Image (cartoon, rainbow over all chains, first blue to last red; front, side, top):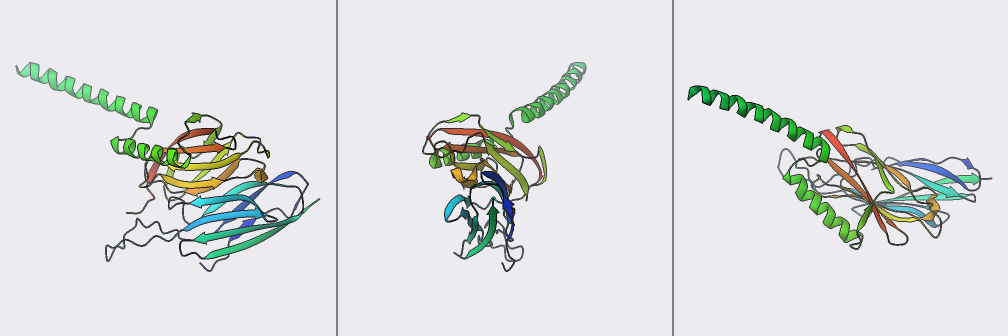
Length: 108
Length: 160
């Protein structure tokens, strides 16, 4: 998918604060259970099977995704920040394609 | 004879109505939809015991936020929160979400870390029909907790 992932991370936070992060990645998430209405053949599975988020190189959360996650996978979660730094996000699909994204936060 | 027959049918109807009513009540109460759903509940349990290493899950500490009625099964918002301090010594390792009535029970697994500060995640899932959604949390000390919520689905979202 050509569309950029959408990420919401606060720009500033106080040390020790728990912040909420929201992410949305545009992907049709083909389950592999649907049939092509003309040929009757199963449409092959093509989903984003993994999503991970790390802060300054340390993993915060990683998600194993199965076909039962809705199209355009959305994840909202929390992170405790003690220092300024960068959040790294990676989405991996069934073809092995990795889509990265970054967000910076200033902690005072 | 004919009178007897008539009373019999009337009774029959009443019993039918009563049975239907009871059935609906049982449906609402237990969330068991059909034998098919039971079969996949077993599949869900098998999957969960496989991923959690066979540890017995205790009820509690896990809460699921889902709509009572999902009009569109293609995208159902879900929030799982686990009662945990999320400190370096005591945190939630993994949360597995399963849907008992979907073609495949597994939905999503979250590998968490103390860096989250709060064991709560939200996402959107697909549900094929009215069913129970279960979340199981594996703690850092190896104990396993579970929570369940029933969702009524108006239009299924698993393709066909």
